[in-house]
Length: 455
Image 1 (tube, rainbow, N blue to C red):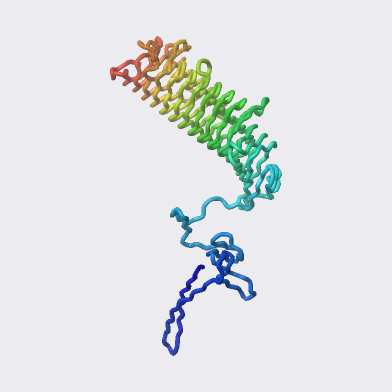
Image 2 (spheres, rainbow, N blue to C red):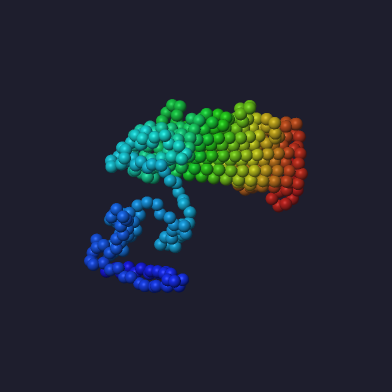
């Protein structure tokens, strides 16, 4: 039996005197079951506004509370809400949706994703929809809508066996998608999915971005596509590609043609030919920022390249770990990258190969750690191999690239360069260098024992 105690204070004024009366009132239920009513308040229409049961359950505008407190209406909590673990929630969090639909193979609001999206009437920034998709395989192509959050029950249990076409301001989250995502001039947010595409023909990529699409692509697994993991084509097609696993794709991990995405903190591994491929055109160069990625395990004994660039590409390549490729970075034709602070090691034939004079600026290779990049039988092996080009090579540690003993293969090789197309080599550490008939300019280089060595 529960006892409810109320403390009443009544203040009376009699002939200018204040009389304070204090009292205690006990309200006791008359039964012993949870259904026994202990206390009821009613409005002037005799409708129950609050009810308290013997078991302590309270209903406010709710006559049959299931939980300890049930309120029909708005709850005000100016001081916040405190949870059992001591957490105090003092402000709103999360997303409030205008409407939530559930898709399930049975028992949901709709049996298909397409039907649920069709029911999202005029979504907007102030009226967003959530479409929740329960576990199962949905054999359909999905065309997303603006301001609709499409959320699966998990990338291992909710499969879309079809194409997914993105929309601006939509979210695609927690699915296994078998035929890729298309972003044709659209900028969805793509989160926490497994994305593959084993089709043949034109649309064989994991995520296919054209016509200035700029999606957020974050924390996905993009694997085993017959084409590229992520394909970016055209000026303005500049996605944010962050913290994804991009693996086992037939052509390569990421290709950027005349586009300039941000590529950061990804694991780009075991793609067949290229980790990242960059191709620019005069007037629409490829100018991505490539930082803090792990790029490795392309075709090790043949043509696999960690980062390959040609024509008018001008990337910033910063603080990546580039390892176990045929070649770490290949700088071709008119490209003019800045290669800064990378760890480039255990590549089969060369850490960096450079054949570019740059379109308007010289190639910059600075502050990198380049080691263990030569294996027996490699063609043109070197830590840095330069052919008739003029890169600026400064502040690098380029040692121990030939791991055999005694080492004979070069840390730097520019012997095929012809004056005046010569590199500038200053303030580096290296041991073995192969020079052209006209030596390169530069000062302050030393070998691994600290002895001065000429460039």
